[in-house]
Length: 423
Image: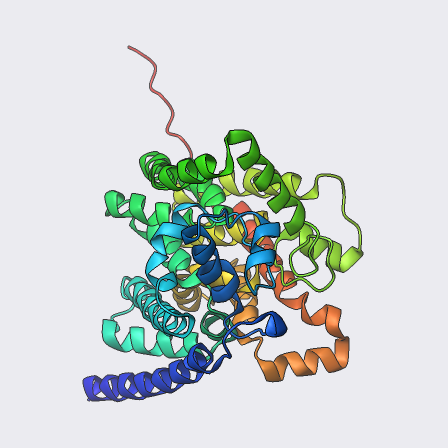
């Protein structure tokens, strides 16, 4: 009887997930072809601005990191951020066909990666609860494609599903399959704001080979593209000038700047500015160092904990530290799904024990970006205003990190055994 119920649940979940996926994928074939007149089009804007036309500029012999070149040559609204250069080669298959074909193929690939991420979360849950992998994957996949975070990946055409699978894979496989974890971390380095803090935390938690190997693979994979761009641009100096111009442009855009009151950001400096309209000097590098400085000893403490669920919390704390330490958007919490799923199971099993409330509250806070759907957002905007609408996700993510910090501080660790005196 239990098997029949699980099969029914899985079947219903796959149907719901299929409908949600179809609904979220529609922009890939419905969006109008980009022109100079419709640069403000939101549907598939990240595919357009961060993948398709950067690849087109690269194939045309230019440097897509140059904002002036991108705005002059292509119908884009956003500059091409400092993704790892291998991004241009990795996503070449989506930039070779016509725009609509590339968009549909990319959307379908992102959907498959969301299902893979759901499978990773289900496999983590199975380490604590005997739930069939297919049923667990179906339920989590359905929740993902119906959530705001999941829908945004397909609606905007973001590369986050790939980065999320890489980052989560590096974290989850670092001990059991270190070679695969090296490749996964290299994929996570596609966005340096994922790769850098994650590599630091993996190194601190003892996975030094994975941290160094993944970083090295990402660097080596990018070298051919960098060499080509340097040669095309006339040398190292002009190439560095382009990177400086790229950073300068990114820090002064209304949709990405740390001191913007409308940007979709969930990292600590941006949230601090939204709440106080105060930004201390060098806020972003200071926040990166501070968050890592606080988190590193605590994840090590959790790993050494006498509690078997300590490493489970350490994984989630690692994910949240990566997110709040440096520039991130709400959709970037996607990679925390497998760790959050297992942490939720751990909390549920131990919810009546003293001291476990912060973990439950942290998981609930992390669910806020996923639940921030259109209807919820409309209410927030109507009651609290536009500023609250773009701030609530960041407040929730930072609060989740702080709650896990508080939990980790109280986690017991084994005392070192006294060394016997020589006889």
